[in-house]
Amino acid sequence: MAPFFAVAAALLLLCQITSASHQNITLPFLPRQDEHLVKRWYGVNVLHPPMILGGWGPWPLMCPGPNQKQPIRYCFKDQRSHDRLQTIVDQAVARWAHALAPASNLEIGYDHDDTYLCNDAKIRPDALVISDESTDGNENWDDCDTKSTTGYKYTTDNARGRHTLEFCHLKPGDEAATEPGAVRAMMHELGHVMGLAHEHQRPDRNDVLRFVCSNLDGYEAGVAAAEEDEEVLFDDDLEPADRINLICGDAMFARAYFNPALSFIRGTFMQTDTDDQRWRYYVSGTPFDTESIMIYSSDLGSKKPGSDNYKDWVMYQKGSKKPVWTGGNKDPAQCGPSAGDIARVKQLYPFPPGHGVQARDEGSSGRMALRVRIRDDFEMVVEPPKVVDREL
Ligand SMILES: [Zn+2]
Image 1 (cartoon, rainbow, N blue to C red):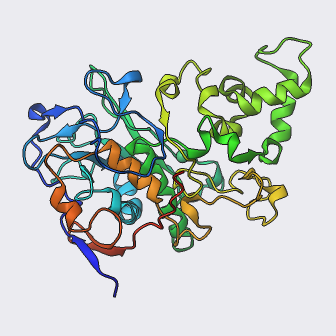
Image 2 (cartoon, rainbow, N blue to C red):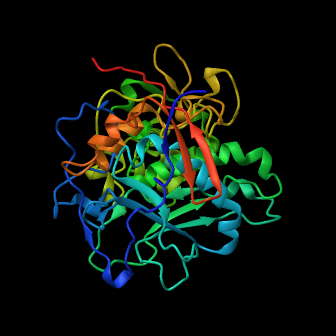
């Protein structure tokens, strides 16, 4: 059996978080400058308070003192969401174990020990609201949209329900067959919640990947909508090819005429959407990470999902024409957060000065399998990520 480092209680909130009226939140520390980390990321920045640019950052520090943590605190929107998704959330959290306490300052757990339902008065306004958006007997299940907020929104009004994870990947009536893909999707969504954006939307994406917009399902309808230009966004004499470049490459035009392209648009061209200024403040490192849990698989959104031919793929690696897979593997049971994903989360949720040395010394920082126990009813051993050292 592989050696492992037990993190028995690590995924419970170690400090007893006080009631909402007494909560004590401070902003995160800067990352330790002396830690060697694989440099790769795209997402929210880490900054000294009060400079949270754009209002979004890592989740805040709670319960300062020897047990301080930066927890992501969640609840379920309703009983059905809990009943269907708790096991998916637990598995996904466990497979992020190498990025969580005691390897970092981050924990993921219930907002309140007494209840998992968001409509309870004890739940804090800023808790992450997890909802199952599927409905029983809905034949249009595929139309359901999975999406999450990226990072933590710092506001003066502490608006309730501003952090959301809406989930559609567990198919009603076909739970067993869709569970592995659902766990993969939940790992990806939790990456968003931690503060990570899509790797394939990095501004430098085109250096590494080729994006073939015309392979996206719905492309022809998008082209027709751009030609019709109902919202009068284009000059009358703008050529069809230029219109296509805009609906495939610029958020303002994609949102109007070709929504499927939105998730593939580079961050630089997401800023044209005036409703979504977060992208202006995202930062990225090098090199590009083709193994990330935050990258889309080559065939996702394609007219021919599942095809093995690169000519059908929406994205593939330039030069080699190799595919990319969410979390580094086509098989959802084999995929997971990459070494780069884990390194970035540890930067966003760093140990405070003087803390964490023991955890590192005990080998919890990425090289050993971890035994994870969540509450008293879920346990699994999680292998470390493959280390792909691409540093130049
Ligand atoms: Zn995503």
